[in-house]
Amino acid sequence: MTQPDNRSFQRVQFFRLPKDQGFIPVWVFNRDGEENSLSALLVDMSESGIQLLTSFDEKIAFSQYQLRILEEDQNTLEMPNIQLKHIWSSPEGGMHIRSGFSFNPIDSETIILILQRMQTRQLTYVRCALTPLQAV
Image (tube, rainbow, N blue to C red):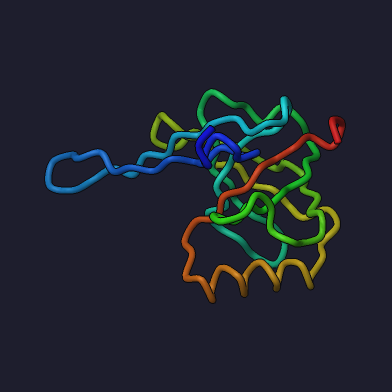
């Protein structure tokens, strides 16, 4: 087995599709090892909530989720559990769904930790996994 085969979480694959004079960003989401878990990208964050990008085929079906932030070189970032409440979802570009979540409850220390990690590593997108709280 090669090293990628040993990963417990699949990567979100990224490529750019040429169109006219530019490119269209495309993400390919693969399910991780947990049956109910959704692969996602954290694309926007504030003190009260986050926006995640998921595959168009994977619908946000529950109102409460647990978020796991994933490192590129590790499976899970050492961080407290983050609980989210689903607020809205909207199709984006025909291939993805952008969803808004509020923190439930708001944990300022964890939010600051995530924001600092994103800034120090100059990350625009952060890989993560969503697990319905009913399945945790």
